[in-house]
Image 1 (cartoon, rainbow, N blue to C red):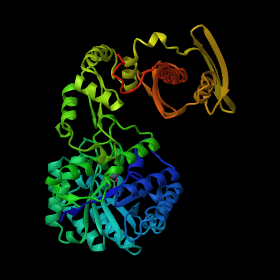
Image 2 (image 1 turned 180 degrees about the vertical axis):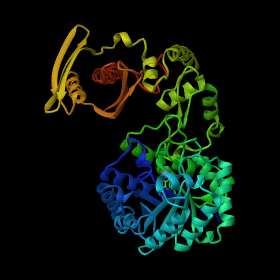
Image 3 (image 1 turned 45 degrees about the vertical axis):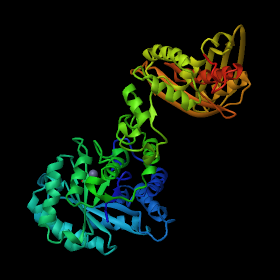
Image 4 (image 1 turned 120 degrees about the vertical axis):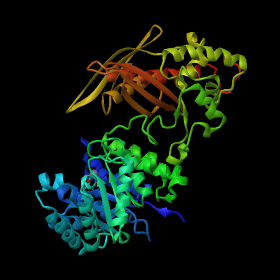
Amino acid sequence: MKEKIFIFDTTLRDGEQSPGCSMDAKEKLEIAHQLARLGVDIIEAGFPISSPGDFEAVKKIAETVGREKKGTEFPQICGLSRAIKNDIDVCWNAVKGAKNGRIHTFLATSDIHMKYKLKMTRTQVLERAYEMVKHARKYTDNVEFSPEDAVRSDLDFLVQVVTAVIDAGATTVNIPDTVGYAIPLEFGELIKNLFERVPNIKKTVLSVHCHNDLGLSVSNSLSAVLNGARQIECTINGLGERAGNASLEEIVMILKTRSNIFNVETNINTSEIHRTSRLVSQVTGMVVQPNKAVVGANAFAHSSGIHQDGMIKHRDTYEIMNPEDVGIEESTLLLTARSGRNGLNNRLKHLGFELSSKEMDLLFEKFKILADKKKYVFDDDLIALLTEGKAETRESYVLEYLNTSSGTGTIPTATVRLRMGDKIFQEAACGDGPVDASYKAIDKITGKSVKLEDYSLRAISSGKDALGEVTVRLDQAGQKMIGRGTSTDIIEASAKAYLSAVNRLLSSKKTTFQKKSQEQL
Ligand code: KIV
Ligand code: ZN
């Protein structure tokens, strides 16, 4: 039987301490519900004494999240408190509505923190830690204690404090690497030492909480697991104070993928990982770096021709995890100048096109020329290549003039002039914003009713005159089309992207082009 590792998520507390990541109560509640779906064991919902708003957010989460799941004590809802009576009282008032509320209290034990920050002696710290755990135990038997900056604390003193708080009734003792200073070998040794030297250690769950200042938070947490730790504190997307905390998605997927080494299990429903990561990123505005392990946009994207060929032949050649396992539909084989025929053919098949080998030769040549000019060749680029030659017969709209006005207290309006051949069309419309207004004006001209399914904007150069690239996906009666537009003016880039997708929809209707046809080239 595999031993269980408790996943303690602190996205809503330590994660929220990331600069610029503060969340309001509604946002915290939305994330807490998703964390419950993800299957975390403990949600650290906030620091109730820190503000009335945070108190209310923690209280609401405690009273609502996880309540629908009958017959289980999870997820437990936890609040943080300093080792001060009033903090603990307030914390309990915030979490007591939960099925199983936890009080997490902390006090620094390193000489540097005790001398300069707390201005307390070792004896005072030892006594306070003991007393405050006792105080918390009056409310609940679910009490966690953290000796802050444990990694830089004197080991003998740390052993004394940990022994004392367990005696006082701490059911979880968390060892934080508050400043991300440890290296895996050393941190594993520290955990091993605590197991060897703390006489009552078996009465508690030993937890770890690692910061990422040297990029080692995940490695340190896992080294602790190998040495007996059974709770890991972590955050979605690795958010947290300064360089962040250990990332939940990495920890969980390492334990799963390398279960031959760790031989432990978690309660996490890994197929909710991607959705949770996206939600946290959207709410906090913290973009996930594309090459981030497990949840980055490139985590399951293959670009080199050799890799794509391997993937098509056997997925395990270049993937150690199934994208579906983390909630991503499928791997992406990005078409770039380095892609080979096999990669291209695979994408075409996926889009529903089957080409003869002569047609494929011709297309591959055109593809390479285009790929040399562009970073990525997208599906709509391929469709454009396939329909090339018919372009002269196509009629398309060209943006001639765009004027928008918007602002506080102003109804956003847009005037759009389009040209098709020698004909000029002009319309004006109001909308929810200048982009929406210009899309409505374009719709009036084309007379088409299309649904905007997706809109994204990114900067493709830096500085004040950065170029913005807008990508849209439109749906017209089930037919989907992507359009892209660039400009230093994001409204113009938006209109160009929309028009490019509309033109493609129109041309794909006008040509007799049919998928799976053998006569396209
Ligand atoms: O990093 C830290 O030491 C903390 C404690 C409050 C656990 O966040
Ligand atoms: Zn922390």
